[in-house]
Image 1 (cartoon, helix red, strand yellow):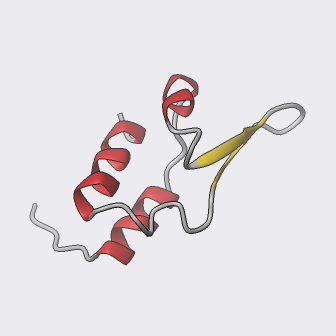
Image 2 (cartoon, one colour):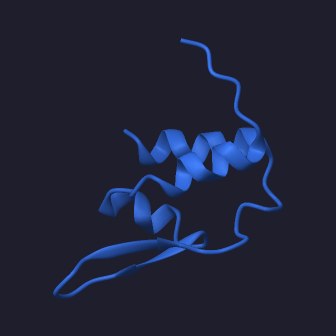
Length: 65
């Protein structure tokens, strides 16, 4: 399957993922984890603005494994 995504669509794709605990440590500059009664990962706002489409896609690949 071939899908053509622009940068905004790639960012939305990444924001729709939740990294596993191991990956969260590598991505803590892009978001934050809140643990406790409800474990939750929140992506930061604007953290992907300065990244290339390839860098954003690589983050997606790391999170979707």
